[in-house]
Length: 299
Image 1 (cartoon, rainbow, N blue to C red):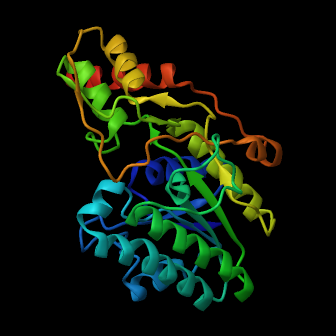
Image 2: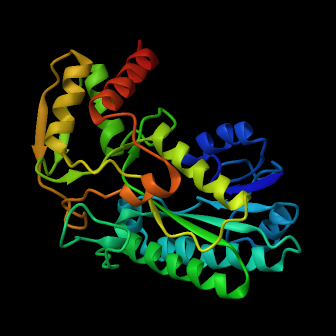
Image 3: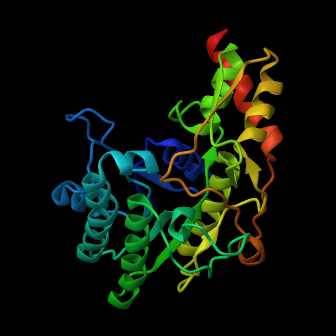
């Protein structure tokens, strides 16, 4: 069985592709990071390439996106075009395929904005506060609407995934861990802001559980959270990284960014019940692991 993975070379995509083999599934890589002459080079806005890539696939794991809030703020037009119009392109390519592949869409906790009650559940209303969240919200709606056109679709919502060197080193947890590993100052933009940080291995395990459901033909699946249900402030995360690095880095506090959601944690009880998934790696263990990886990288 072949499954197309858009955004296959990103943080989550690379790990998903590696682990699909365990399900006896052959991942078809599709990413702009490949050189233009590479057979796996692909942009979800290039309909011709996308249709060719999906032609022989039973499913699509759609991870490709402008994947960070700050990038969306810097280029809102590209964010909307990629995240919303790109998702429409994925849906249309699936509909044009004779195999009518299912689609697993990777969404974000940003669709909730500032939830009135925490931890947020999958039923928490959409209320995004930035262009990234808006693009993800509208993409989710199109994914759900595609069910009426005969496609089997599923949605997973991620929350601050971390845990690999195969990531942008300026993202918050990698930045903290890298600084702690090298003894550099740790900059904290809004130390009281808190998030539900989730370790990459846990997130990929959960994603593959949803893939298994789709492969088995399960339909009308609800959105799934892969969250810990625990809020960790940025100040706490910086201190955990500093402790793991054992170099007594200076922690420098700065003002929070005005387009960030200040607090979030998610309830994953439905995911535990329906998928048998549970978070295994705590924030303490995850930060220690990643800091050690950076220490090995820079030793």
